[in-house]
Image (cartoon, rainbow, N blue to C red):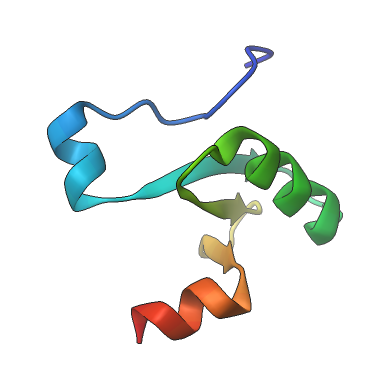
Length: 72
């Protein structure tokens, strides 16, 4: 909390298997675009994703549409 950069730090091996930069949010209300912009600013050469969690709800993943299309 409060540290700059990615929220999940990966080893080089994990980074090869999971080429994403993760921003995590655990709050009741969130501006999706602001969160994604923060994730993208920290992503560097990797694809940015936001993991959003609300109380008593399942976590959601927010990803750029073009990155999503590459995945599928």
